[in-house]
Length: 116
Length: 111
Image (cartoon, rainbow over all chains, first blue to last red; front, top):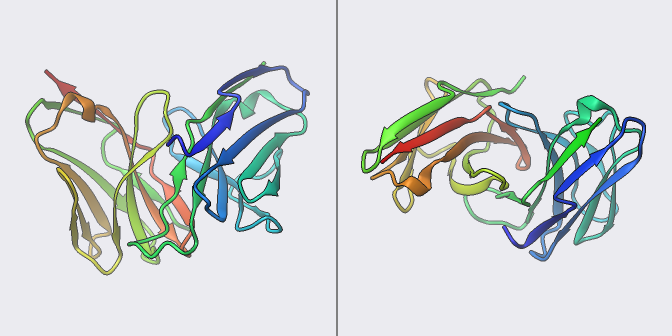
């Protein structure tokens, strides 16, 4: 979905380095999420934020931190990258006032991260 | 805990045939279920969803069926096209925002 953008799209880094993945959205949604996808597996939730002042740990938050600088921006940091953090990372957004069947999450294009 | 799984890792169908992708879940507390399509190099794309108090929901060429008795849902794609080739994920939504994803089924469409 072009309304959710992620930078960079690809990144190669070395063990021990600090890196930041950025997510921006123009959908005006209040809720944002970071997921990780490993080969052959579904997505797993790392962190989520319901508004600028709200940060919550997901299923696999160890080794990661996040920052919600503004409603439209949500960044994910790896303070000291390790090889098993090699994965595909997705940002998603949702609107808490969504009155459809459920609160649909819309995903960005992903960032492919390789930690050597 | 919650888990959502898929019966088959790969499904191969002839172009023009109908496709049925299945998914099982373990926790009955889900508010609703969603099917996502993921093409190579892209993020998951919303296809269709269904609330837990519904049995069936139809979209354009797609139908989702929910059987709460056996904790099973399926995605049916009518007249499958080459552009339908992708990995399909089911996800259960708990507490209005928490998505639990299955591991995915790869749909291959034979010409």
